[in-house]
Image (cartoon, rainbow, N blue to C red):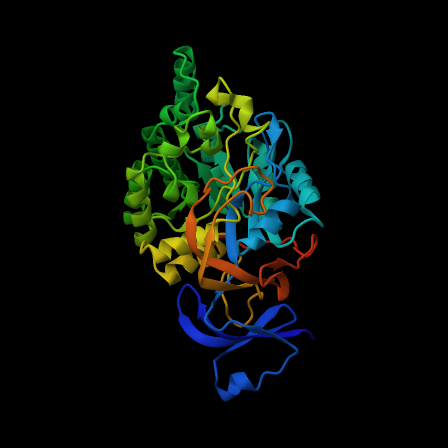
Length: 466
């Protein structure tokens, strides 16, 4: 039996803050006891982690990553090995990545391909959503089978015609099926048909720089698609999770639906909270580093996103981690912004950026844990195995130094990408030690993990429904 005791830290979960020691046995948390009490002092073990003056928090759950994703004629630059190692450095101990169904192929083929990419390569635990690109009768039957085996969420796209796009009829059929089988539809909500018209017109005017990526993907077209997705879900009687919400107008649509009592949920990402169209407009093609979809918005949208996180109209912060190197990948779009691969690196930065939000007064410490750990675990059927510190939970635990100062930089990050979206940003707070199922992956700022430690995690259905 392997035993570890974490002593002297402030244990923070979504619901509580308590000075407690944590006892871990065989990869699970078995007990908590107030620090210094006889119960805690009675625990004996060779492995003691001193967390005095530190936070003891659940490992982060990043419910939106794209390792090795094929896109725009290239591939996301992080493999499952490099990406999960970087996630661990940032205090994330579980990712949910997206397996991709290609048009003309089955869901099973796509899922098997992603299992092959990930198996034996991950430093932390992982699960999969399924991107549904080709809705037909066979696909709908496969959705039932996938839910039974623990792939319980399905992503559809109102954007990217000719690649991932589904029309309203296909979306409705998939939603109807998920209403029956308990699955959760995740929606990329942008009006891709209209956006393609605006892209064509911009390029015809000679507007080719990265900043035009944000200008053609209009906030109103995100709001319109969000509204349409909500109404389709309402017709189907299905819950809906809208990914990477970036526009205040889309937040308003979510808030209205939730005020009506609908099971509609929203996710945003650090890039929308901390970056803006100012970054897209950086000269010398530097703006290409910030091209992602939905796009970065003007700074005035940020206040509404923070408000949505405080009022729970937005429930989750994920990264949509999809890195492409500036040299050789982002550069594919020189002279044509529509050819810039869409995506930002961020899996290593999320927990730190959200702690900075605590320092800055945007959210509370418990809300930090709620939006980064507990709610994503509940939303995607992994709670309380993941996302909390409680007896019976996996011992995915982070010792976090809230006073350490760091400067974010590509020079020091561990993601396999040649730039940082947050280059030079000063942050208060830093991960010190990370345990994944009780095993040290980061030990006092040294990597002590290994590829293959992380295991596939089947999921139950959404635990967040009202």
